[in-house]
Image 1 (cartoon, rainbow, N blue to C red):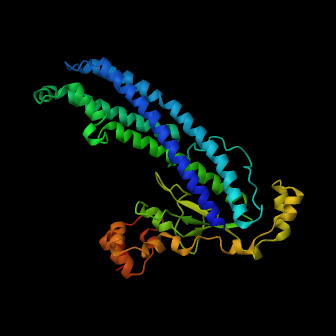
Image 2 (image 1 turned 45 degrees about the vertical axis):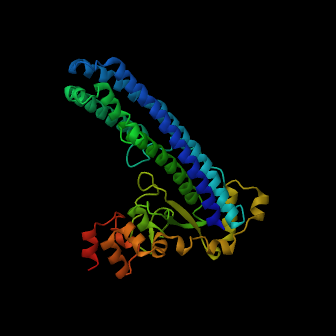
Length: 369
């Protein structure tokens, strides 16, 4: 079944993307620690010298930001590799699922700079620079605060440099989860992971559009757990044409996944019913795509596969939510929102506005009085 083949592909990809985000995070951590070491080596923690410290912070911060060039290069390279691989593997999974080589498994052209301007209106280097800039600002603010509060820190038996280090690196007792470094690593990993997911979803969407004579629409699949956002809960199970026009509802797709940072949603292709596919036209297009005469002769549309290519109803978020206990539903929706959802017989899509954004509780109460 095509759904099962694509799920296998996506599970494998998620493991890869997570591993790469950890790798990027570790590279970022190394750069951060070199940045902090430079500050600790050059700042006189015994005496507060604002003008001198400002110069030290400026030079160290500049070198720290420049270190992101390598990270951006890796992320862009990964994204292009992901795009090419996922295009090929998505087509292969569809072909295997329908039992016939109906989809060309080679990208029509190299997807150069696949993540440029890809993510929420900005290019990857801008996102990473924003993380670096906010980190530099936070480190500088904490250094100044530590130096100004030096007398108090000393009276408590804490040296200025030890206090600075605990703020930027974190405390061992808290497993270093409280420092600037922890947030910085999370932000880098999130951006790297979302970049990979975007490239993979771009590739899948391109496969669907390149084969719109065979793939009639797409269905939104959301991860079924308590971490799924309202944005993806509401879209789960809904369908659009391959170019994003709503089918059977008025909800905007709001762009293809990822819909937000760390978005785990996917678009499932829905094969057209076999009676809607002109066999001669289909074979002519296969020839245009570069299939051999033997492949064209062997190709056929699996009627059962085309008629059962959507996700089972119990795998939509709303269907899954109904199987949970009352307490579990409240934990996800909140008590008052869950009460309206249950009593009014709503779906998770009904909790979004027409732009696909989550409504506030008061907006939901007013709409479903």
